[in-house]
Image (cartoon, rainbow, N blue to C red):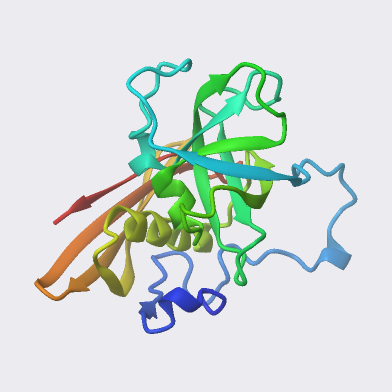
Length: 221
């Protein structure tokens, strides 16, 4: 899953399936040739550009830039993206084309429709150097994310939140059905630097039917 992420080549990733998924690849999706012909509901990616900002105290959406561990963005008022919407962003300039999920927290008048202004932490989580200023990206609105992908996105969030640390170990902890429309998955990360080790847990809450994220957070344990 993480083979394309050279930055984390020394990380020992351990996957531990939770009850109900042993021996299956998360539901056993049928082969495409045997699937019924249904209209495609997946959003097509849009190519654009991203800049970065340190954010501000007030946003047009009434949501702080610190939401979702600063994995946030501003969009133009002439775009189809709405306040609170989750977008999947891929860095097309990165050799590994790293991806993150960001939440729309601000809207800017007269801003290009295919341009995003990411928080600095989101920008660096994409593997971009702030000194570059602008990167080419691919945007997917309301992405459907497979369950085995959640650990990857939380790892990027954790690394961005602790830039002075190195993630050395990662494991799945548990899955909790909070309601018919909300499932929470919890992961644990070990981080090291010259001063010692930190243990961080991350939660992602998503809709198990649509596979769309609702919120995510990390905290030290």
